[in-house]
Image 1 (cartoon, rainbow, N blue to C red):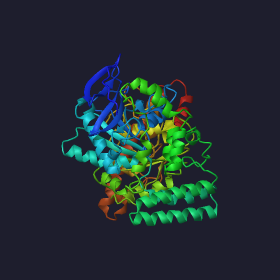
Image 2 (spheres, helix red, strand yellow):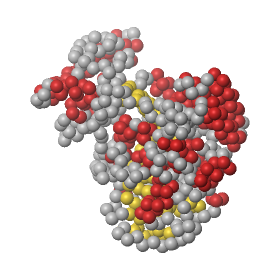
Image 3 (tube, rainbow, N blue to C red):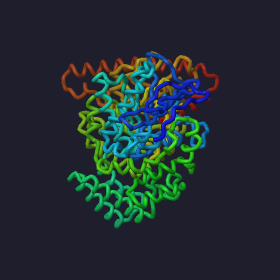
Length: 593
């Protein structure tokens, strides 16, 4: 690779050099920095960090950092995740209203080496497994975090899409070990797996039934799909992973033929209707596709979700000019095809065990799934989740889902359920690229995942988390016993003392509009103005002795007192409003059905 030592005009340059290549550059106000990390000799990983303009340095509410992990293998997080999904600018370099910077700082990487702006000086240095990719990413985190005390105070949340989920779970375990060994100075906040390729077997078995149910396949198409899926299962069971990749490719081609080219990222569309796959691909990429087995996912990423902007042209043009540290004789994405091919032996391997290990170690794991996705379908995701051996799984599976709403809209945007450190979001109306298809509810979800100090005004229904500490929030002071008894089906936005409008009223209304609790048996349905879920039966009622009955009575008494207090708060709040019609608006904004 050409090596040039660069002085960047109007930029503050951090003087870290390796082999003559500038390693880190920041803009004048410090809101952005980017650079290369040599994760192994002659293996260079590119990263780009954005500091949120909303960042608050409050020790009691640590500001989160979100590490975005793209899929592929070979999809560029710096390009796709940044400019096409969640970054501050879109591919037209216009401000994005739904940027995740409103919830935390953003760290994008081109991972594994060879992806995007990352490169190796010898293609033999390309990684071949998820574990090898995780080792490189861990080295990157060590280089970024260990010398920065400000970043060390912020929890890091790994958010992954598609194949990136396999990176995330292996990186999560690798990072934990590095933290325990004292090699990495970082706080791991949790992981979020969005439409991720965790269990290829479960996904390929879901394709036929899913597409048959939405009329994209007939009975014959279903049978052919299931037959190839069965062959993949046998190959995976025999550790014939490269052969399974070949059969997977045949299965995709078979389904495309039988469904008249259904879009694998949104079954409501044809592949030539979706801007993800309809955009013009480079002639070089077409040649590579013709010569090699190449993921539809990576093909579509190169074209980009949400528009027909040539992402390669953007990155090799305006972005390269901005960055100023890319080697002269290296072109964005020129090694990405090789990255995908190098994972031929790992592509079809499941990573369910890694998810189990993370859950067992108490790491927060969030799974979210777009309703319309095919390649990483909700049906397949649910199937692999049910294979977890985590001790809380059965309780999680038996819980009722709760509806999600956004910005006071009456239409449900999704569902969620949470138990201990496992959380699942079903996002309606979204395909594979959830942040693109449903930005509002996704942004709220990210705020919940990261426990961001900045929350939106949207009303999101979710199971109540029992970890609140703020005295301003009724949820935080509600006795644990009442939460367990009632399983309240609403999670209001957090509000501070400065919030004195709808957000405050939403919170109090949702938790205080109980007409009467009285002393009715706990198993009876609670009379309420809003539609709460049916309460769980108290553990006390399951016992047959008198002591248990006395405990149940105490539970009811405590809850009556608390709900009375909350009801008084809502009445007082409403009395301060001059317009009675606001009451109806608040109820609608709460999003209860």
